[in-house]
Image (cartoon, one colour):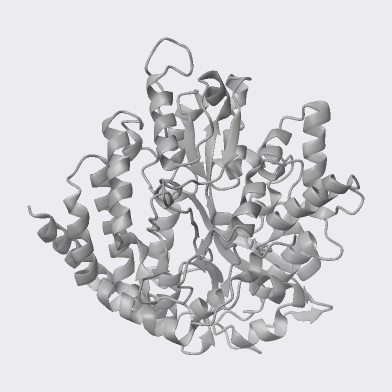
Length: 566
């Protein structure tokens, strides 16, 4: 079957399902029990910011291995009964209940079915596409006035720190239809993590160009770095999802000037989608070369992050691209090999090209409130308290955010955070170290410093990961350099979902991943050229036009949020 016909057939089938979805939304909503009118419910009163008697608020929840592993270490706590659920009830009179809890793909499938049927909890976390569909179907509350009147100054400061982009994406026909769960562009910066003990053993230098990266990968594959006399190691780790924050390929592609997940300016000053630019073609050719030469796990295309990580844990992989939290994942490699040492290095570019580090617009989740729910303000109240307990004037950071290296913030159904918190902590620790006076450190910076100090003085196991992230040569020291050197490349499009994106964007992204993966696994590179043509024909041309309409009306944007404090 010709590729073009294959793509169009696939697109037509899925588009039919997408187009039919709003009818399902409306039908489900009409079948729902309608809320009892206000005044007939015996509604609780608010006394000093607390509902009396307490109210029940329902959510659904995604869980996973990491979350469950942490809960197992917290006696007397569970996902449904923990320090956060108790705090919300004690201070706000809000009882958190979950209609259901599921993992990974099962969660996504159940949520999709729930939304399509119009039957979902009081508060639900959705992506931009789901938000637009729910709003169009009239299934969610307008939160414009709720946010204005209920959000604390701290909440507004934090949620709006990266500008209005996230709120623009949640605003439909001039009304705020959901509250963005704040995130941070700087957190998506990539680093190259290398087995530095292998570098030393093989007398190799840290990479300064992509040519060096390729040379190191070849040496790690063919030079028996684990010393077992077998060729059973691989140069670079990758997973079945090419955009994974750890073991993905966006950092590798940046080395060739390719930015496949963001919108960039073209030579004419307009916005163009990075995933169809010619630089991607060369990056895919180089990845194909690594695969065909055996420098990648031959089964990576069938493995998620957890499965591919087993090779790293077994000492079979020497490099990977990943975000700042990567060393906390790499920590366990030191359990089986005490000599294993990993080090973060800056991204590098091919010779003759300067490096730019792409940052995604990283707010992709929004909290919507079911139409007819009597207390739409609860989502803002929960966020207010979450932020106050972790970053307010009376914060209890080591109780509610990170308890002895356990990410207890994950126990909360809402998890907003200051976008610059990690960079701020790094800079505070760096400055205190330079002056020799740590007395000014507080909250997160103080907690991190104590763990790194305990690692140096007592060998605290978890301190290794903190040092690799926040230490003098850790990930954030590199991010600080990216910032000072003007190497950060922000996504130029921070607007909401355009009309054509509602129906076409997910399909185009799936197609992009499919074509990229096929090329890496050996398909002719000309398939990329065909993909570019198909991308435009299947909605990309309309999306590009809509994005540029937005750009022309929002051209004056300031990306100075992370400006160096030096």
